[in-house]
Image: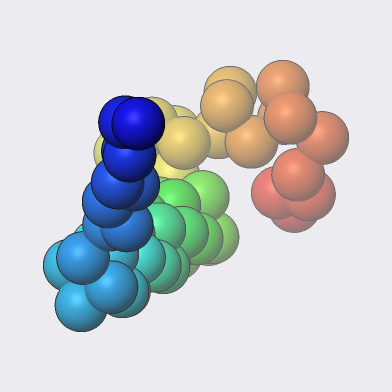
Length: 63
């Protein structure tokens, strides 16, 4: 008679990976908000114009 064993993933490594992914997603979201919001509302014309077309194409208010 043959017996098979199943291996479960390392719980600590899995939790660490999920925490790392959550941090990456959060930082990416904050960077996106800064680019769309902060740069778009900037008083520096060059920065504002760089984000202007993208903001209007996504329907994000600009003025």
